[in-house]
Image (cartoon, rainbow, N blue to C red; front, side, top):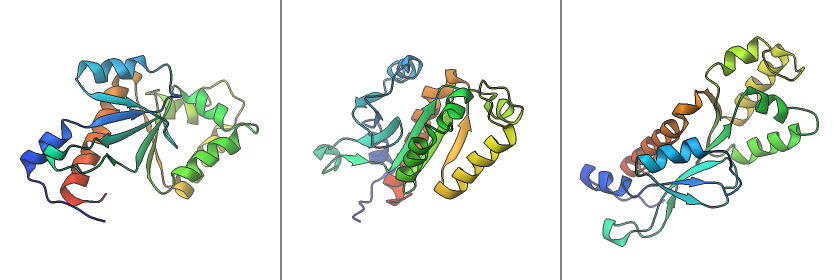
Length: 179
């Protein structure tokens, strides 16, 4: 892999061009778009192979970027704990696991927009009849097997979290050339 050495000043200029990539199938994300637009963060709508959000730096000859740079990092957003339990039902479980399989060679985060999501999970405070211990076991098994993480967060912070998650990964990539 080719890596260029950029100065801190060049990195800051490059990071100003960073775009959050949003999957074209992602919906009900006005709260995230509002944050990104309010902060002047550029977005790009396109199909994402796995996850709902990604990140890229567009080609920019003036800044020494010869082609678009896409991070191999993705965020899958779930609106609440019920969405996860729904993904783990018999008829939808394989599709969910297939997404995890596709994502296992990238940095992948499952963002659950429910600050009390973990508490709800272990206490069975969700619509599904999924046993709380079985749910916890399934999710932890999948995390170990496919190498992703789960973040539980109040949805009012989702745009901020997504932006900074990618910003610092991209900054690290520009400084070191790898994750």
